[in-house]
Structure formats: structure tokens, C-alpha cells
Image (cartoon, rainbow, N blue to C red):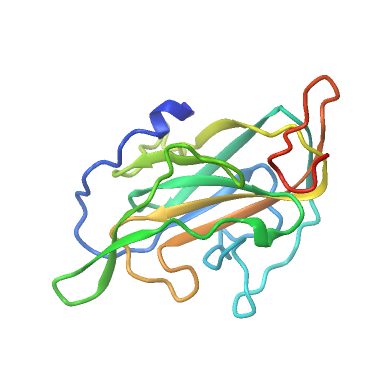
Length: 210
């Protein structure tokens, strides 16, 4: 299922699920920067899924793109949870990646802190590329033959130069208890090499561009 950006930016629907659960997703495109298992782990820690607690094995894969091109994203949810996705880009260092979405929380009947909603920026600016992607409050239906349905879209890259920059796609989960490392968010990243298109002006709002 390929969801257009406009549809992905719609308001978050009211939740119909009443208890905390886990959620996981796999980044299928572009190529992930680390090896992941069948659930997509490691993915909890910001900004790219790994930490001193949860290490990862780098794949060494770098996706080469031209500035101004559309980068194809393809993910699969392995464990459902309501919420949305967000895409950001760091150019010089991953420290440029923004903080996880701001959460509004609530207490469950047993006193557990849960996420009620996450803040979506309707006018994303660098380092954000797209916010509020794939908003959903129900499991993604499978294909008629029982095979998984993928969430897919294309995101336009800025016209910049970077030898090894990082694209981050994260999932904010609603009605979810705190994770030890990622609170209410799961994270995946991919390494890119972007070469500016000489026919287009350089997007100087991004770090290191002249």
C-alpha cells in the first residue's frame, strides 16, 4: 500500500485499543545502516536504533542519490501499534537529527504512563523532511493471499552534497508504555551519499552547503 503524503498528514484518528503493547517495524528501503532481525530490532534507542546497551552490526551499505530526487521508503510493521512515522535528514553528524516527537501522556487504570498522542509538525523544516506519515489506528490489512502489506511513499531530497549523511525514519507509538531506551518511539536509519544536481540551486538551509 503506497500512501500519498497528503493522506499521511491527516489528523490522527481516535484510538480504539485500550492497553499497552509492543510495536516494531522493518526498514526495507532504503538499505538500513545496521543488520536487523525478523522484527526489525535493534530499533528502540534514538537516533538510529542502537546504543551502548543495544549494539548493532553495520551493513556498510550507502545509498547513492542525486539532489532533488525522490527517495523511496518501504517499511513493514511486524507488530502493530497505532501512531505515525516521521522522516529526517542529518548532513554532517547524526547529532543534527531532531528529538523524538513530543508526547502527550496519560495514566492507565493501573497507573502505568502511556502515550496519548505525539506532536506532528504540519510545516516541517530542516532537518525534518516529512512528518505525520502513515497515520493509522488499525492494523495494516494483509494482501488477499496472506502476504504482508507494505507502507510505501517517496520523499523528495534536498539538493545538497554529502558524502555520508543519515536519513532517519521513526515510528511514534500511541497508547504505548515507556520503552527503556526509546520511550514511545522506534527508530531506523540509512546512510546516503547525495550529489547535488548542478541544474538546480543548492538548498543552503542545510548544514555545510555553499
